[in-house]
Length: 70
Image 1 (cartoon, helix red, strand yellow):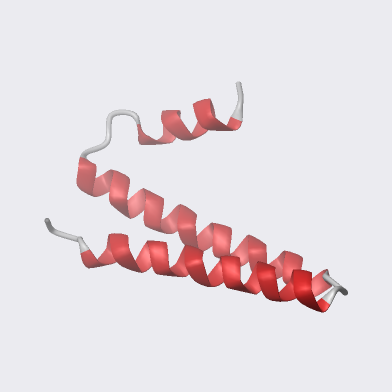
Image 2 (tube, one colour):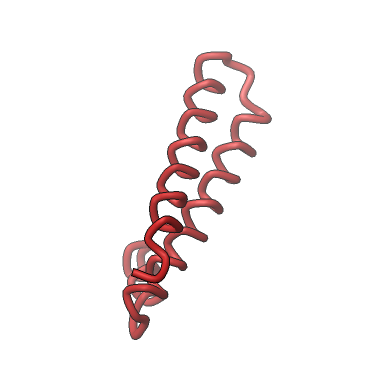
């Protein structure tokens, strides 16, 4: 089973609201992963790119959180 199939299984049977909540959690987990990669990155440009990616993940999660209840 590949990552896409695994993720699809996590969302199966959930309401749209539950899917948004789950995706927001996954986005924040992704942000944490990007930050952990950035912590050990020695190249300043790569580190900056990883931190920018983490910020985008957080923004994505905030979008989903802003849609809670509707």
